Length: 223
Ligand SMILES: [Zn+2]
Image (cartoon, rainbow, N blue to C red; front, side, top):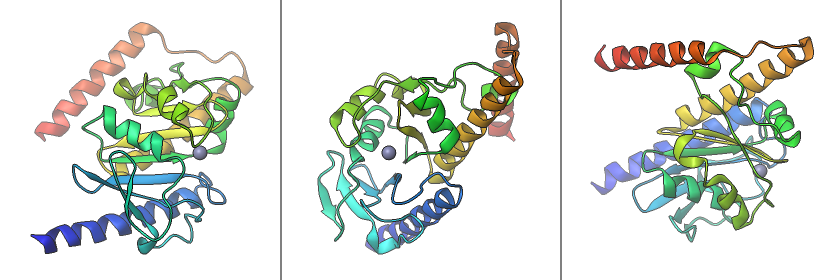
């Protein structure tokens, strides 16, 4: 049993490092910015340390914390932004992984005081729905968790004013794909506004797409 748990942790450590590199390569985590976490079990999280490039990160650099953020294992110090991860796990039992990064276009929206709430393209409705903007909070403080809390139950992606974005899912892959999608939707919104007079989807069209998504999800479950 211990062996199985050990193998599972080794795999999660490798996965976390792999997705950190992918996010770095996407330009979402320049310098030492950004952080990732994953649930190890119902009491513990595996989290990236502070001050390490996600391009250079090794499995042994990761730290283990409890659900209050107290460090249990690891020679490095846990990220200063751990409170946002704790808030997501606190409000969402279904979440297994959290990613925080600074994707440039989505972060620019957050700096302009804008969320991604207008449904401009079908993909937005079919994937994340509205991505709200959480109010300004100083990084590394408990204010960050408080600013995100109202949105966590009903959203899987949130922009953070003058800061960046946070996404989460059942797995690291799922959280990563949501972060990619946030930046993609921000890029589309930027260009649509640059072109001028973007057509926002109508309520009826949004409803049709949501129905199509429900049918698709049902088929995916059955099939
Ligand atoms: Zn940050």
